[in-house]
Length: 217
Image 1 (tube, one colour):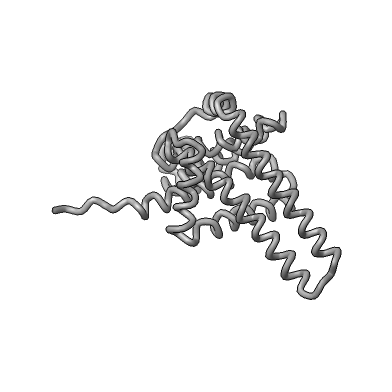
Image 2 (spheres, one colour; image 1 turned 90 degrees about the vertical axis):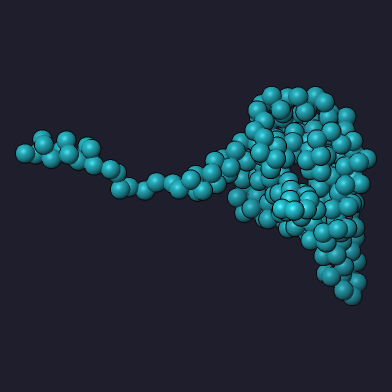
């Protein structure tokens, strides 16, 4: 009888915990964004390739928003070679923005003039907006599929002008990423992936908002 009961139990449907299709897709996306972040870190190790590695991450996640699954390793190797010079220029702009922001904030905090805290916060916000615009331009270039950098910058400016929430959303994503890395430094190994996904999601949202839906005549 005990043996028979065990056989019946074997054919009984499991009642344990299982992921719903929606939750399973969310877990898959989270895992893939972390993989993108890890590849970004790997390809950024030579330092001079960090900008090109970001372009590769942007291209991968832009493909997801357009329902295209790009091979991670091959995409990174191809884009890093292709965008090495442009990525280095983008990296230089970001470093210049960061250095200038740090210097100005350091001077303001050191002077301790009336309202220095508010001025320092405004400088940090301005630096974040400039850095966010650079990341937004890279996402627009990846989303556009073949846009030149000049066209990508123009597209980013159009996004920021037509949808005023665009740059604040990008800066918020950057702030959350920095806060998480500051709290748990180990997150630095993959947080570039979620950040790239967030910036690309903003671009995809704007694109869908600008595209009129087909209506029956």
